[in-house]
Image 1 (cartoon, helix red, strand yellow):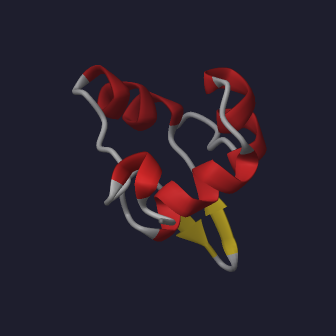
Image 2 (tube, rainbow, N blue to C red):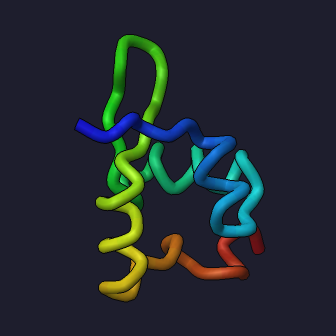
Length: 65
């Protein structure tokens, strides 16, 4: 079994902010697992999700407006 990645590792690999990775996980938009109170990411599942087109945050860039 592959080692699960942290949000910080996923953020660094894909050029995202750590907060954005957690937000995507909180909204169940990015594949993740909870290990106790921690959130972890299977790199292969995240890569497949991205290759499939991912999923944008609801409301896009204007969601705060």
